[in-house]
Length: 278
Ligand code: PXL
Image 1 (tube, helix red, strand yellow):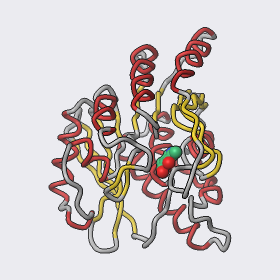
Image 2: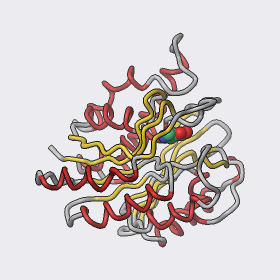
Image 3: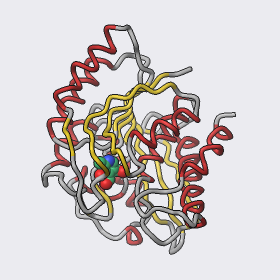
Image 4: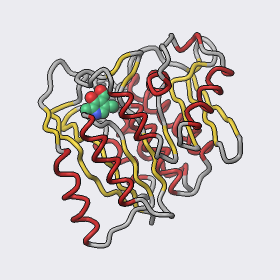
């Protein structure tokens, strides 16, 4: 079984980051080590939150794991709550990546044209430096614009040729494989597009769009991609599975009489994951 280490926050309530990465990766038969980078009462889309930054614990925790000779096939990062954390993760990757490990970075920092609450205005510059050492990145459209230093526009206004140009510009910043999520292809179609620089190959995958905001879906998407890549599926297939899975989670949420505004009903869909790796 392959082993991933994921470095992102624990939001005690809110169905995102580690609390979705762990179940998704487990269902994709990936052993997962967690290094929490911060601890929040709930994610930052709630009206208020209490947060503890664990940046000064990352080195000690990783040394403890390394002393026990535990190595990783993937390093997978998500939401990071401060520039200090990004610096710590940078050092972690440089120290612990090996020839056999892939570094997958989800620059989870913004959506719908805005940085997440609590992040400093120049946060994207620090994130751009981290993604330059990644192998694979999975920004949404807002994050792609921030990383490229471009203004954000409504997703419907992007032609696929412009997304392709953004994919290759991001790949030129360092990561040879890039997926942009939240891409539209027509009035009621949403999905993702990717670029693999090694093969100079573009691909896309779309599904029916549901109106509404579905929090935590970016984290679920990146976790599916990570698990599928560790099962040796090509980038395009990993992306296709992630588009399908997020779509199924959203459909399930819309059907759920107990649906929560702050996260999707992914628990009802976990059984689907096995089908992607059989
Ligand atoms: O799902 C992204 C995410 C992760 N972690 C925290 C967040 C958010 C989005 O708001 O606030 C703490």
